[in-house]
Amino acid sequence: MYQRIRDLREDADKTQAEVAADIGLYTTTYQRYERGEREIPLDIAVCLAKYYNISLDYISGIIDSPRPLLPKAKL
Image (tube, rainbow, N blue to C red; front, side, top):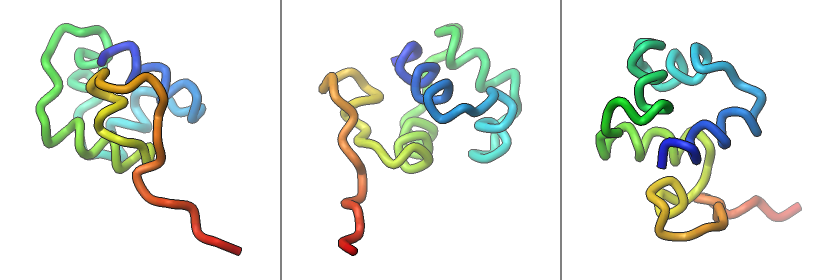
């Protein structure tokens, strides 16, 4: 789970501080999640899934491919 949230952040070209601020955490708390020093609470995992618009199943390691949380709008 920890590597996945780091990969998602890096793919989005965000810093740890940016993601932490966007979801309402202290940077040090978010850093501990990425390093695996703290368990990620369910409510924070849900926030991250919404933030990156991906399935919570991907963050939790149930599936290996990130699926969009919300379908893309048709043009």
